[in-house]
Amino acid sequence: MGEAFVHAVVANKQNVLELMYEEQRIPAEALVKAFAEAAHRKRIGIVKTIVKLLSVEKNVPRQLKCKAFVEAARHGQMEVLEIVCEGEHGNWPLEVLKDAIDVAGGNLKIVNLLRKLVCDQVFKEMITT
Image (cartoon, rainbow, N blue to C red; front, side, top):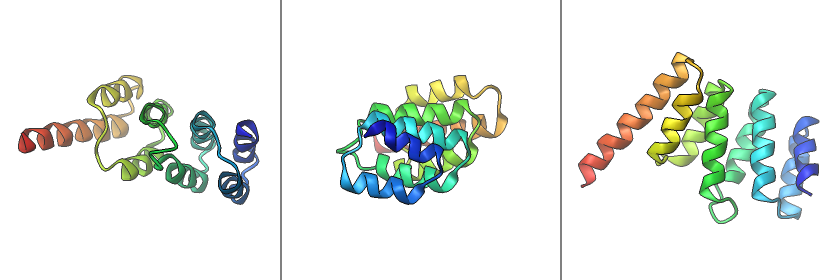
């Protein structure tokens, strides 16, 4: 079922993705793979759908969400990063943010976004402790 889900991304079938997810439980790994495919193909509507599915905490381990975040940075997908960040509310592990900066390949817009996230989180921690 997971591979069929990824193939629906490749075929640009957003409605099929939603139906498949509702009817069958899609493995978390397939969600992340589908996310990477959609981001790479710049299918923003599908990215948004998958981000919603990734945000269901009980279905998707946090480490897989972090992997998707780093992959978006690696591929220079600013709009995708912004969409993913909306779902996380600024609670990324600092190590994940560092990894994303490392793989951003000097893309200044993405590096600046990631640095802002780091600063916001560090500042937030300082205020709450």
